[in-house]
Amino acid sequence: MQPSPDSHDTFPILYPTLCWRGIEIIYAYVGGPLCNGMAEHFMRVLKEQCIWVHRFQNLEEARRIIGEFIERYNREWILERWVYRTPAQVRNDFQSHPEAQAA
Image (tube, rainbow, N blue to C red; front, side, top):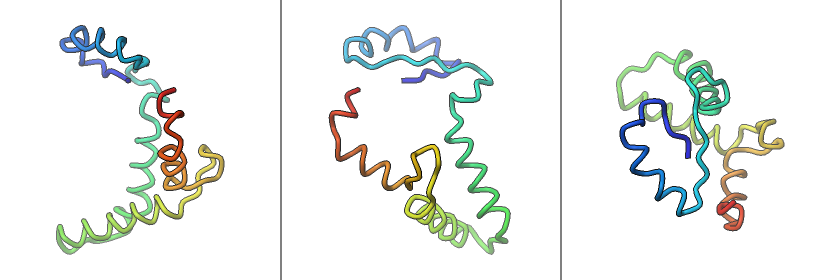
């Protein structure tokens, strides 16, 4: 679990339960490049490859086109950081090996 900097009010209540369940605490630092880098990278790709290149006529069209991009990204984009696999392949591998989830 990676608590956010503003979770100081609730974190002391959750901490004993997290430790008891064996959940590792990884502290996030404001401005830390690795804390949420994967999410930020995806958002950059989404903007550059989809949002900024379309002029959406309405909300429904935006939802459809963005949804199609996300499906294509998960199914077809091969990423170096995941040993040249797609996000769908990584997710499938993770779900098919429950012992890896406990680690």
